[in-house]
Structure formats: C-alpha cells, structure tokens
Image 1 (cartoon, each protein chain N blue to C red):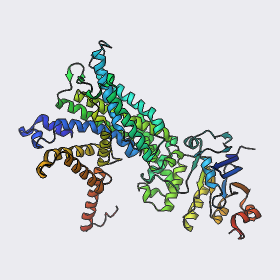
Image 2 (image 1 turned 135 degrees about the vertical axis):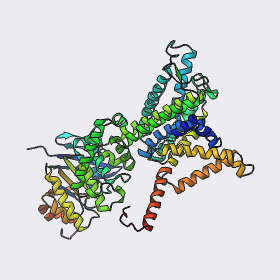
Image 3 (image 1 turned 30 degrees about the vertical axis):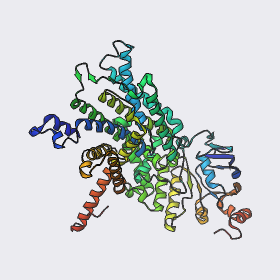
Length: 257
Length: 346
C-alpha cells in the first residue's frame, strides 16, 4: 500500500487544562480532496496549526509522505510541500496582489541579501521568473487583472483567492484550506469548488476545514468528523451523512442538508 | 544634495551657496545630513520594511565611531602594529572591521531581542542603547570616558590625497550615502525585500509561506547595524574627536523621528527626513529669537517638537509619500475640472 500524503498519529494538543485535540489518528491519501468537519471548538483549526507547525503538539506524530515532520519549523514544512490558508486570510495588506503571490515563490528561489544588494544579473532573471510564475497562479484563481492592486483593497472573497494563489505558488503537495468558503456568496462558492477541483487535477492533495455542509458533501471524497477534539467518524460523504453519532454531535436532530 | 556641493566649489556668479542660504546651511550641515542619511536608510530597512522597531540605533552608530577611533588612535599611540597602523588604508580597514563587528554584534544580540514584538522590542532596544551609551562613557581605558577620543586622523587615499578639508570630505560622505541608498533600494526591490515586507504584514503568514522569519529579522538587523556603523566611522573621521553624547538615547529617538518624517518604507525619504529635521532646527536656532522676543533653547525645542507633530499629523506616511499623495490629489482635482474624463482610474 502506498504511503499516504499525510498521516497523523494520536495527535494531542492541550492548552493549559483544555484538551483541544484528543489523540486524533487519520490519514490523507494522495490525490484526494478530504474535508474535516465538526462543530465550533471541535479542534479543526488546532489540527491545522499542528500540521503546519505553528505550535508544537503535546503528544503524537505527524508524517508527511512517510517522513516524520515534528521537528520542522513552519517554513521548512512549506519547503517540504505543505501550504495553507488561514480562516482570517492573513494577506500581506501592505503589498500588492501580485507581490503576495510572488512571496509564495520565496521558498522555491534563492537570492539572498548579498545577491539582492548588488542586483546581479542572475538575481534579476530570477526575479523576472518569480513574476511570471506568480502571474500564472494569479490567473489560475482568475484575478490576473488585479495584479497591481493593493491587496488590502480587494473585497473579502477575492482576498481568499489571493491567499490560495499565494499558497499554490509554493508548489505544495498538500494544500490545507481553513474554511475557504466562509463569507463567500453562492456564486463565489461555485467558483471556489471548481478551483479546488482544478488544483487537485494539477496534482495537489487537498485537506480542508469547512462549515458549509452542502459544499463539503459535493466537493469532498472523504470526510472526517471531529467533535470535542476527538475523531467520531470518517468515510465517504454519503456514509458520514447517515452516521447517527455525527448527526447527533454535529446537527442535533436535523438531517444534513 | 550633491549639486549643492558643486555650487559651492564652482561658485557660479561668484556666489558661495553659504551666502545664498544666509549661512543657515553650511558644508558642515550637509556632511552631517549625509552621515545621518546612511543611518536612517539602514533604520528604514529595519523599521519601515521589516517592521521591527529599534530605539537603540545610536548604539550601533556609536560602535562604528568608537571602533574607528580606537583602531586609528590607540594602535598608533601604543605602537601596536608598526608600519600597518600608520598606513593610509588602515582607517579604511577599521571602517570595514567596524561594520563587520557591529553587524555581528547586532546579529548576536538580536537572537534574544528579536523574539520580542511591538512595545517589548522597543523596550529591549532602548535598554541596549542605554547600556552601550554607559559603556562608551565608563570604559575609560578604551573610550576615554566623557572626554572621548581625540586625534582621529583624516581619511586618505593612496597616501597622496587627503579627504579633507570639508569640501572634499563632503563628496566622500555623499558618495557613501548614495551607495547606501542604492544598496537599500536593491534589497527592497528584491526577493529579500518582499520577505521583509511580508514579515511586516503578517509574520505568521510569512513563516507558513516559507520565509525563515527568524533569520531574516536577524539579517536585516545586522545589515541595518552595519549601515549605522559605517556612518559612525565617517562621523569619527569628520569630527576627529568623538565623545559619548551623540550616541545617547536621545540620538536614537531623533533617528526614529527622522525616519518617520522622511517616511517609513521609503528609502528616498531618508535624506529628506534628515534634512528637514536639520533645517527646521537650524532655522529655529537662527530665527526664533527674532520672531519671539527672549526665546531660548527650550522654546526652540518646543517649536521643533510642534513642527514635527504637525508634519506627522498631516503627512502620517512621511514627507515623500505625503508629497506624492498631495500631487496626485491635485492632479485628480485638475482632471476633474478639465473635460478629459478618459483618465478616471485612481
């Protein structure tokens, strides 16, 4: 059996006495679009922060392509091939749209302080290449015409897309999307869904956290349900949808729409 | 700025430019502006671009000055390196050594300090500045204490050309200042500069996007300190005598003010910020008593502070960005009045 892109083993995170993530174990198979769902405070964002290395786990391990990445700092995980977006977007609002995406190329390029200070020909060529690649990613999310706009001036939905372009520019093998659909209208969500599918076709595995159930059920091929930091179910959407424990924990008595 | 030097040397129409400015702006002032421009350009990289505040930059400025002063006077006095310490290139070597040592020191001290953010970072750098100032004052055997170090030699090139008097030194200082500006502009408009601005925008997002934020913050602090050190060395050879006062906490604050007035995140703002601070102070010193009977030093300080506050109120992004903004608005108004509606894009 091939090694999954991401494997999480008994991952645990406590903040003081609060258990945010309670020994979660799961895998994300290569080439999949997988979703994590669960009520507020279920530990979804905590899980993302642990995978991207923002803070250390209390216990447990994270494997990326079969290699334990627990000792890697966030920028090294980006280099290894993990990219993410944030729930609150976190664009560099002091920079233009294209510069945001160009920053994503940082980890795949080299020029340091000295080369930059003297603006060597090789450095200028590299910079040109960074720009061209960034334009490609910006076109992929459909925002090519806004390249020179200040990132802060875009409406919320488009900021989300810029953040995805920035993440894609790092050429990730695993893309973590933290509530990519929150605050988007129906049309924008449809576009987002198509974008995520195109990203997967380009060879990137996608793991996303999302609240909108119809969105998840239509997009994801595999769904993992967290509640109070614990995994309570996992499987194809149709199966998870019928799971009694999920219905109780997540939706009370209503059925999943 | 450099053109003013030409004006002084050439004296067209027999006019010395000192006469043109009624003695307010002299070569002395222009050299000081050039030297501080180098410091402020470096400070701008750190504060304006990477978003890391430093209230102790005068310490790095002072380190450069003292390293140059000590290396060029003590070695000679105690005959430590006969033949070498008297050669024309020794002070230049001291200047480079100072930049290396100061940059290295900043890198080392930055490891614990740059973990801090915002006000805490401000406090830590402030503390660093005070400690270094105290060392400059108290390490008598090295720094000469409050009396300082006299007899710092002038700079020479090849044993033939002495970069003095002031009219000559002026060119050296401004060549260095322009090189500093060029280097800083290159850094800012590059992959590295983008990473620095990203750290300013969101350190977390920069880190997760692949920027080694810790290393970049250390490197930009080291580079910024090396700029300050270079300026310090130039200052030492300009004054020929250095004492602790210009490297005090007050000087650090003034550097931050100059950077802010010129415009943070604007390399070209640096010379303007420094010049404005100088010119305002000189004008006040020369003219305030005429305007206000019996005005003394404290009135000058109040007026100086007031003017800076007004500038920051009306041009919060600094002189250069503020001026560009006003020009753009003026053009917009003009376009609106004229029937050319075609160019309405902001």
